[in-house]
Image 1 (cartoon, rainbow, N blue to C red):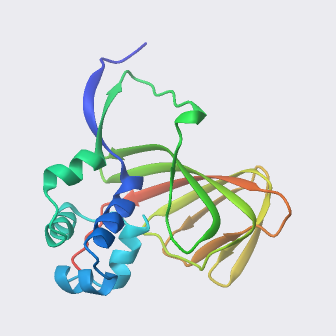
Image 2 (tube, rainbow, N blue to C red; image 1 turned 180 degrees about the vertical axis):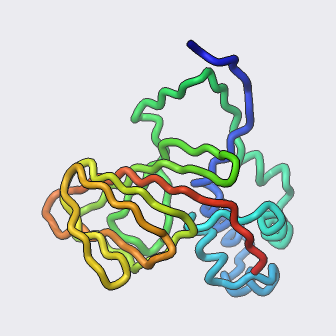
Length: 203
């Protein structure tokens, strides 16, 4: 049985960081320059641009203002309209590719679903790892749930290394430095669920 349908605005959180990065580069600002303008640290802004942290609305407005972008222009790209009929069917061809760390090699992200709820935001992504993929350890202001769809990987959590095989699940606090490594000769596919809580970012 379907619930009553309604139209509502949906925030494409996976686009937020890359959108800020795009406007920053268009303005020819270095990360340190934007940090100085906003009163936030460059490491914090880097996490926001890489999708590792969702800023509070006041912090987001500060970033937009200092970049000299109109709110209408920014949110037109960031917000989309959705109709919810009690269920959501998402064909695989509708998964949206996106980028996190620019320097990462062999990390292919696809956004599946995002939704806000009281107290936070949930984001589901598909991550396809090429053999010999390469990226430094990162931290994420979220809890992460990983399900290895296929392949085998070594998942590094700080100094610990956890070997994951097809069908394995890993749950961890994203504030622990982490990186998956595909040391095999075949691609590996991960379903990644990010659970972002309400953050308080003031610099």
